Image 1 (cartoon, rainbow, N blue to C red):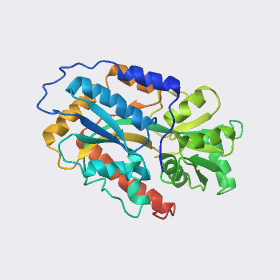
Image 2: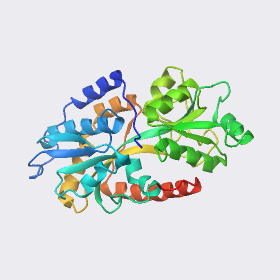
Image 3: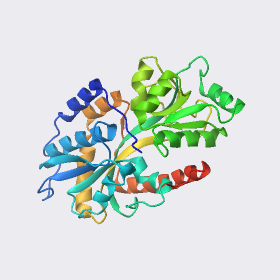
Length: 329
């Protein structure tokens, strides 16, 4: 399963502009690292949001730390091709991963075995960005708000459908969490990728979608989709008129599709700390503004905060997958 979506030409140009913005070359004293090309592994195809974040980061780190920073796309197997390359790489800081949350959290529960361990095979560097989740529908008259959708779901259990980019995807997990919190039963319709899922939501083939903000935002702005609630503690700056799920009457319903930078386990602490400082500096005010326009929130962290987040969400996602009765593949 590949949990990504296609970036429009307009958004790609915004990304390109963001990438070319300068970063102060002497933000901090640099050690000997890096002394050669650094490879950022992305276990997804080019063109999606993770790939774009990786390329933005590579350009920024090249300016601030020196040397060449290249993005190496190793797609396939829901991360099971690219992620092991980083897990087995030498712990020297020259092979890193830019990963979506699902490869570090959900995969452990939906696959019988993984060729990497999310908790022990990597040294977390920093979370990079959040992509908030938002519940959208195409029929605004039938589902004007979250309460109306819940009422419809309870009136006919298992018939109100929602789209996702595949089993175990962020959209799927958001639907499972919604079912758990609202005591409803929905009909999950998985697709091969977010683009197909959003298209059938637009066309009314499915009634709803718990979408990643960047994939829904253009259609909400165009009036083609109606946003009912965002799955975050605060309202999204790109959709200030849309209530949070708590404001809409559903408590404790927060989920985002985040991305992170990781190194192989046992990478020296000095390199991890240098990378962390460089990442935080890379996401300056100008870049934050440009990403926010795409519905992406900068959410850098300490290595310890990222490690804790992975552990917490591994547990949460395992509970959701078990409650849904999904059988590991």
